[in-house]
Amino acid sequence: MEGARLAAHDLACRRGDRVLFAGLSFALTPGEALQVSGANGTGKSSLLRILAGLLRPFAGAVESSGPIALLDGNLPLDEHLPLSEALAFWGRIDGTLSGRDAGLAAIDDVPVRFLSTGQRKRAAVLQSNPRRGGIWLLDEPLNGLDTQAARSLEARIADHCADGGIAVIASHQPFALPGLRTIALAEFAP
Ligand SMILES: Nc1ncnc2c1ncn2[C@@H]1O[C@H](COP(=O)(O)OP(=O)(O)OP(=O)(O)O)[C@@H](O)[C@H]1O
Image (cartoon, rainbow, N blue to C red):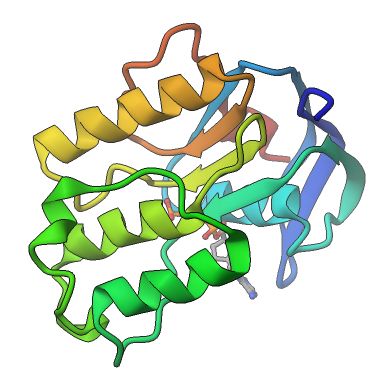
C-alpha cells in the first residue's frame, strides 16, 4: 500500500448558522500524529467528521489516501449481543480485528449494554480497527480509560504511527506521543 496521506486545505466548518473555524490547513505524512485541541464546542468533533468524509466542509477540501478508521463517542456494537459476538460481527466485515484487550477477555459473554464507560471505550478502540498504515481519527480517545488502559492506547497509537500510519487526536488531554504536532482550533475561529 502506498503511504497514507491526509491534508486539509483552507477548511471552514459551519454548524447551524455559525462558522466554527475557517482557514484551517495542514498536511500529514506517514508516521505523523496531530493533536487538535480547543474548548468545548470549538468544533473538534466536527473537524474529525469532515476529515472522515461524514460531514461536508463549509469551505475548503480534504485530500486523503489510505483507509480511515474513526473512533468517536458512538459505539457501533449491537447492545444486545455478548461483547465477543458483537465484535466478531465487525471482524467478519473488516477481516481480523487488530489487537486484543486482555482486560475485556473476562467479560466476553456480557451483553454490550451492560459494559461500563471505560469498557465501552476499550471495545470501541478494538472496533475502530485501524488498518496498517492507514489514518486513525480519534475523538477524546482517553475519556473513560483508567491509567493503564490510557498508557496502553498511547502506546498503540505510537505503534500505529511507527508502522507508517497517521493519527489525528481531538482532545483536551495531554498525550505522550513522540513528535506529536498540535493545532489549537481557537486560532481558526473567525
Ligand atoms: N447538527 C448540528 N446543527 C447545529 N449545530 C451543531 C450540530 N452539531 C453540532 N453543532 C454545534 O457545533 C458546535 C461544535 O460541536 P463539536 O461537537 O464539533 O465541538 P467539540 O469541540 O468537539 O466539543 P466538545 O469538546 O464539547 O466535544 C457546538 O456548538 C454544537 O452545538
